[in-house]
Length: 224
Image 1: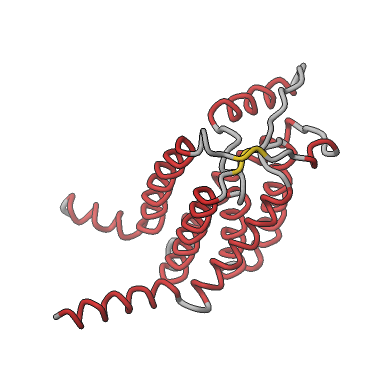
Image 2: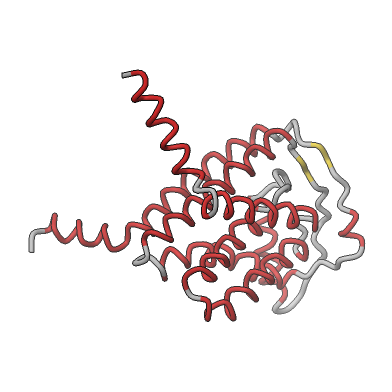
């Protein structure tokens, strides 16, 4: 079989996952620019919840598991292209709505210094320290960790309900971790849930992207 044919078969089989990575790369670039733009604009919000919620550095493991969890539907359900592409639209919509919030309401939360740790906790401490260094406490509302994770959970609900026994606990642990490692406050998670559910309904119930496509197609036809 010619190499070109093999590549075509490979691309066709893994297209949803490839499209996801293209989306995430573009998303990360835009997010980084917005974060830099908000460096001098962000409004500091006192995170009152941090006074009552202890810092649990080992929760950084669940916080980091987010990156594998949100990509997992595009790996496991890549053969069900019709549905999984709709969930890619859900991800895109969550990102776009979140970007609007970041630009219009740039929020920053105070971040206290990490306490000294010893033994096995040092590993979690160092990972969290690296996250603190790379990810500034800006663009906190809504939490993309929570928004994308809920979208991934809804994908499992749509395509493999029996796997919810795995997906729901992972989602809840990621949600809790965003607060326990002091990257977000509870309000950030609540806002993200509302945005993720809204994006899901707009894509699956209102078929928003198809309506936008038809609108622009109609505009082009009228010009002709």
